[in-house]
Image (cartoon, rainbow, N blue to C red):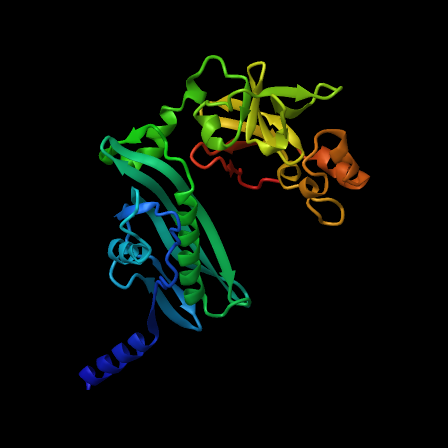
Length: 335
């Protein structure tokens, strides 16, 4: 009798569980033969992805075999014999979890991964993805399936973006891969230079590696505001660049103009308000789009007086610049 009860309980428990396999349906496109070989290094301390509630059942999200085999086979579908690079994906974190609300469930996907080109002298950094995305059961009741597909889409887009990046000149030894961010950051010339090089920097890579665009000089308007970079007959609006340095002082281009780049023992940062990084007019339109990214007083025209007053009362906060992606590291409660 006891054996029958145990069998029935086990049957009920197993029937209430389900496994959702990661849906690796669309491999990243490699139209320019970027990849010659593709290797995955699974650096996660916990190889379990997670279990969430889906339609009142526990659903475990997992790879069919393991991350290394499944991802290498998946990307291998798009490789060609004409490929040029030995690409390495470092999988640092992959977790799926949920949070029960009063009338719904919110599923969360957390992913952190980086790409490198492997050469004779070590691993050359390409790009990094560190993101969190959520989905509500009110929008899509199949949480596990939806989060699995989101992972595939995000990773595919990330790899395609990596194909377009310029590999860093400095390399990382294999034993240092777990701390690659620290190793690379410690070597950045922009953080060690006593004097910054004047000029414009087209992207975060050139800025953090302290390589201004050759031949360009800054042009200001009658109020002394930098508006353009000029190279002979070529005039480019300053908003087209990532940053510039004028008289040894660095500035980050933001939607409403530019902000001075400051330095602390934690890295480089700017002091801004959320409305200056993600501005909207009173009708909800992005100011950077409306005003074409112009600087100074022109932006003020696009903001109604009430909104401007509210902006003025909000204190500026320190927003750090990620040297490996160029993106903003927003402080908690940023507003």
